[in-house]
Image: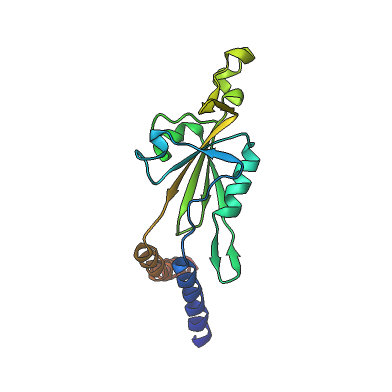
Length: 185
């Protein structure tokens, strides 16, 4: 029993360290121009927009390597979730065009939505001649993609509250399963 308590306490303590580690800052996209449009600045000050010629894998690799949580010299691995592009209106910003929408996530902590709009690869532009495909540009410079990033941060107290409540809830579920299994034996 004592060993079980020490093990659970160790897991709890590691979780507290993970949840209270400093949050990453919203990174800048390498080799890209920062958007100065209203929707990327004062209308949504928590978001960033970039014009870029990087491909989707390059964009996501660059951002995932910069949006990191570190505990000492250890880098906590992040996960990526892929969403339907139709969800960009709700998850990033309304009136956002999208070819891809992914989320870089740290469970029970923060995440960052990455929305990419590439007119040349957009399904709705597939039947158009190359000169009919709309171009995107910033200050007269054409780019292949517009990348919009939206962070979702959570307060430390909320993380710790949820983490603390997970333990008694897990215990109750375990006891309930144990009781159910013993009734059917």
